[in-house]
Length: 390
Figure 1 (cartoon, rainbow, N blue to C red):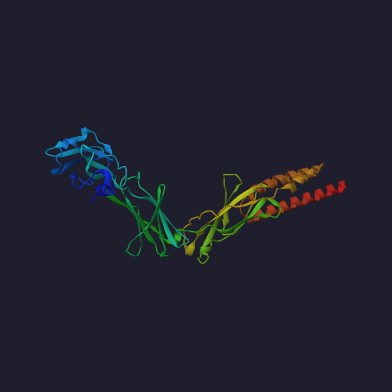
Figure 2: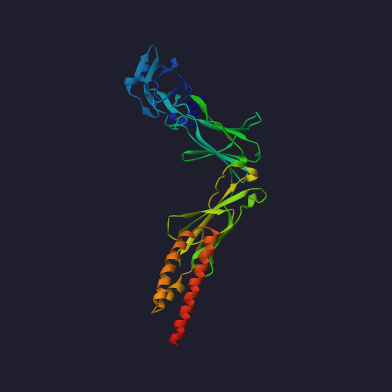
């Protein structure tokens, strides 16, 4: 039974009956875009219909009489040139009608293109327990007819291939998820086959080791806190992804942070394998949002760079307001020596704010020493001024 005949059985009120039968040829043809087609409709002799009284429709639209030709004794032909791609994957409906509109017979036209070579095949493993692969359609992508994409894989040293079963798509990307029974320490060969009624094609074969394409959960328990009264610093702490606690690897971490209401993130790259970092050079009295992500480098000796995890959920914290330093400006008559010292301190302080960025231990220690000294000097000055005024 053709797709068109099945549709008629589902919709009994279209006027089709076993007593009114015609034959359409060819039945359900598959054609390339731009092709020409001549189809014929021959009613059964018991109907007593003249071919000149018949007409054709394509997807419900009546075709012009200029495309018809009568083939004696009882056949009406229609010729179509430069066919466009099918409007629906299930095929376009080419239907032969009697003069009163009754449907005599129908055929499905499948007009499209053979698939092009799938491209940009990439794969990753979540916590070394599964495998997800992503690819894109080759060329223009659209074939206009049903096209099957099959991700296949096998261990390099074994001939038996397997097919991925769990498919999904998102915009221009296609995915397939392989769960469980993932082999470690043995390379996989992975490829995508694209097949439709006009042809088939295979992507480039990708060879990979699961341990080279591992990505993790984001770091857990991200906490952001103040560093005493230092109004331009915040301390960030986190824990390693728990799913990899029993796997030998050297993690790399990355931090990014932004101001409340800001759109631009500033990234700290030099965190290394630490699970804490102090952010310096921040604005006093400001709310910051902080995120951390992980790159599992060297899992069981892998030499590949690893794949970054997603960012952790944003964690918010604010720096102290910095009112203590501002109060130091109440000294009404600073000496010339103090003015020069304050200028030098301001210059050096600006240099430190610029170079203490990140998690560099030495710059942070120097920075802390100057900040503490500066705050103590202002406290002492305020106490002297208060003693003079009492």
